[in-house]
Each structure stands twice: as C-alpha cells, then as structure tokens.
Length: 438
Image 1 (cartoon, rainbow, N blue to C red):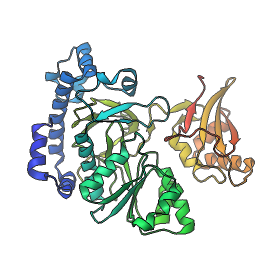
Image 2: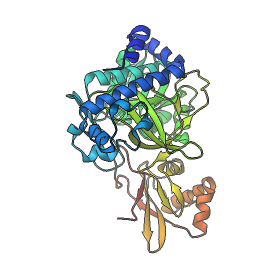
Image 3: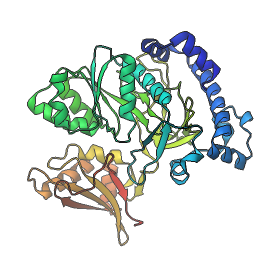
Image 4: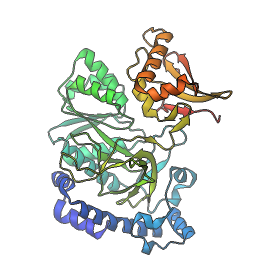
C-alpha cells in the first residue's frame, strides 16, 4: 500500500495522465518531495519489518524497533547487499506472491533474482513514460526497443512506458543490428532504445548505407563513453539520452534531460543515499524502493560510485540529479597503474583500429610485478604491433600519470591477441578483471 500522502498527490493532482505526471516531476517543490520520501520510507520500513524475514531479522539483531525509524540513518549499519540476494532464498525477501521474476545482468557470477507483480511493472513503466515524455516522446511516435528481453526487465518496462504514452512500440529483444536496420523504414521507427555498444554497431551500418529520420535515441545498459555518444549522434543527427537503473531497482531510476548533465532521479519511487562520500561528494549509491511490496529493498547497496549534483538544472526539472557513474566499488582494481575502473579502458579502446568490440583488460602478477594485460581480437588483417603501439600512445597521451607509473617500473604492460569470437562474451562483458588472487 502506498503512503497516504503519495496516494493523495497521485489521485488529486496527477490521475492517469502521463503529461501531468511529467509536469509534477518537473515542478514539484524539493521540500514536498523530501516529505513524501520520508513518509514513504517510514511506511516501507514498517511494511518490510512485518512481512520480510530478512529485514525483520536485521532489525532484531540490531535491536531496532521499526516504529522509531524515520530516516535511513536511524537504521545504522543495516543494509541489503547483492551478496544477501545471492546467499539467501527468495522467501527471505518476498512479502507477497509474485507474478514475475527478472535476473540481473552483472559482469560475472550467478545472477540475482528480483520478483515483482504486474502492478509494480506497470507503475515503473508509467514513471519511465513521464521521463520519455519530458524528452519529447509523443503518442504519434514509433519506438523500437532492442533491450535484451531474456529475463531482463528493461524491455518490459519500456513497453509499458510506451503503452502509457500511447506510442507504437516494438520490443524486439536483442536481435542483430542488421535485422532492426532493415525494418527502420518499413515500420517508420523514429525513436530507438538500446544498449550503447549495440547502437554503435547499428550506427556503423547506417553510416555506410544511409539513415532514416530519428528524433531521439535512448541508451542504457552498459557504459556510454563520450566517443560513443558523439559518433551515434553524428550518424543519426539526433540526441542520445542516457537512462540509469538496474533490475534490483525495477528498471529505470533516472534519466537525462536534453541538457545531458546528469540523471534526474525518480524520487517518487526511490530514496537515494550516497554512502561515505569523499571530498568531491563521490560515494557508493544506496537505494530504498518506496512503492514495491512484493520484494521491497531497504537500503540496497548498488555498488555504483557517483555523487549528487547540487546545482539546479537548466531544464527546470526540480528532481535531484545523479552524476554519471564514476565506477563500481566491486570493479575497481588497485594496482601499480593506480586506481583503475573499466571506464578508463572503454575510453582508451574505442578508437583503436583493427580490434573487435569484444576486448578485456586483466591485472595479473608476474613474480613481484603487477602486469596490465590487454586481450584483444584482431580484425581487418591489421598487424598486432600497430595495435599495441596505438594503445601505448593513448595511455601516454590520455592518462599521463598512469603512463608515468609504467615508465618508472610500477607495473608492466602486456598484450595478447586472439581471433574474432575467441574471447568470452555476455550481456555485460567484464571489461576489467583482477587475476592476481587466482
């Protein structure tokens, strides 16, 4: 059950209208949003204490009564972690009978399973619809969504979002880009929704064979580098907007506006915290779901590292913004080159000619030395020595401190080349791996 304040606002101000919901998200006073969040947080904590075995056990172990909890900090060190979802049975988290299950698409290991009912999926779609509306999607538009539909939640939520708007939508799973390209003109798609790397492949086809009129491209799923975004926009002559979320969050929890200066967060359905922020405000993102009752998550540690952007956005939306994701707590590797995140290598590798998009960087140990090993698939008959030289030059020019550590012997560089298709592939390929403990 939603909090009384939330029910009142939705019933009297918004109703079933996506445009009104978009306007409410754009102009709601921050003080009102904070009050609604606090009210919803208290309801969620008390609901989970009554119905969720895992959370009730956590409260009992900490000696905290749910009735005295008003804000996240009142829970002290009580969190829900990805490891909790993996190590406990679903029954420890389920509060009522589910109607759908989705799996996470992490960079390795067993997937986490998250349960919903149909109403929760439709609600998630409705709020994504408001974000799409704010970015210009209208009932007359025709959307093709190429998010993977195999136990992944995003395509379902986008489908429900288009239904709420009244827009034509083909949620086609994740076919080869060529299949979608051949149908762009036939079905008159003018909004494309997909993963960044998939969009790059589609754009490479369109660059050679021609484009169709497109008004908006929405990307989410893996990291969109600045180089990827520039290339896709140059090909299609359309803005690329990024969304942010996860299966645990129920799909999207934030989306850029046309200013593209951070994600406007869905503060109606989530309460966000930044855990242990550093001097610049960067810390681990923690999320509490405020409107889910099948499997609510209280203070879920997302592992993404980001910060809140305090300045008002030029677009006028009052919802708080989250910075681009700096990295992940569980993907950061500390070695002789410095503190490494996958994004560093995505920026390095994008413009290297003669390699496939399927590459990996490994940190391993050779005696007393750290080794940074680039594993790449050669294409187009290019010589391995040329690729190696290009990577070395990019490290030196773009990351001078990282290169300085190399020249003074803090780590060694190594290169291993493969035929196309030889390296492991997955929905989210693990770009950076630490093999020193293997």
